[in-house]
Length: 570
Image (cartoon, rainbow, N blue to C red; front, side):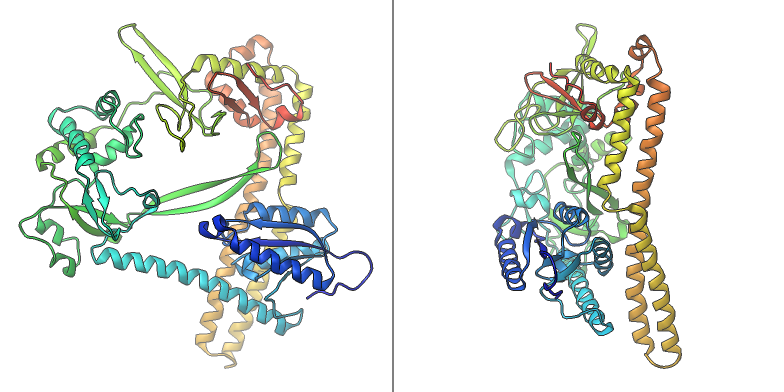
């Protein structure tokens, strides 16, 4: 532990993290960690500058609100040490420990965990490295055990209650048994599914006609709300093997022999697939639109696995005639949809326009009125339209697209008509983006490049040791594998840093384009810009507009806040 002796106050930042939602809700683990850290800081004579916690955050990356705060405090200076209860509270990747240690050293701070056993000696670094590898190994083993357990259950013919199970919902038309490992028919909801297949397969209706019929009749959606049905969801139901009746011979071809032996030869079955896709989630942070701190979002990437990796689980037959299913699938499978782009460009799509009640993006809605010979265009809250209840947004009003777009452009065009204020705001926005990159991106890249160089040197040294029979080839393979993992992490971080640099370069290019292509236009020409050009301007300026249920509108953004313009509120 670094000594508290010396001149001047020794100031500590206490950091605690929990990774599971259960721990985050109870707060017990966070409270326990912070209490232990307070006691340790008091014994060592440290003045606690701030206590920072990260509830429900994974240690697999550094992109966490609390860790961002810690790095900001260290960068501001005056911090002697950052304390955590265990090394894996900082991160579960050894390479991230290296980055934090080097970054904090640049500002005169150290990183310390109560379970640290080492010091600055080679033996101490070896001990800490072993602890880091054990933490990473534990995380990997937990994930692997979870995956293998689910795979084993699926191969035994059991359904895996997924993410929606926490809300007590199974696949639409079914319900879970008491053990939540198999599906039973929901007699009421399966009738809705049968109706979908009848309308598609027998009556030949398209998906959107089915959607309108369900909406008009007030049929509750899978969430239990009398809200607007999702056409793509209906399409997925019609193409799903869950509702298609399969003969025993068809099912036996895709399940294990043990599961096949349990099938009744006189019955038909639906097929539920496990492991069809792989979902990767990562948390990213970005400057808040009003320039006040950062906001954090999750980004998801879904990749479909090869079909040979899917695991089939037989479920009860939905009771839908095979002819209906085949006809519906043939009709829906041929449908490719029609593009709305030929009718209208939506200026405020892509997250520019958001609901003032819940913050979700407003979605575009087209309402054709053949009897009037006219089509109306609206924006509406994606969570509030036709939805009611305490757990959803109450903003149900549709807002005329033409009116909202004109009001937003009123504020932005006023800014473009004052080039000097625009330039000031753009320069400040770019500078703020640089500040949000913790420390110096160039210096951080150098740290990772140094780490890669260290990995190469260690690799060569291990190979020399193996050649001299100082270590076995089994030990060599294990050490090379560890170094390869560190190299992968370092390469990923370098790509991220280069991406940040590219984003800043793009902002600088956008600034020049705005000043040259748009701010130089006369007011009349600005008002004549088409929807695509206006959308480009909104993206460059990071504009965000929020509309309230009663119709009041606020337009904000990095440049708008810097220029101290009055937000549009009508």
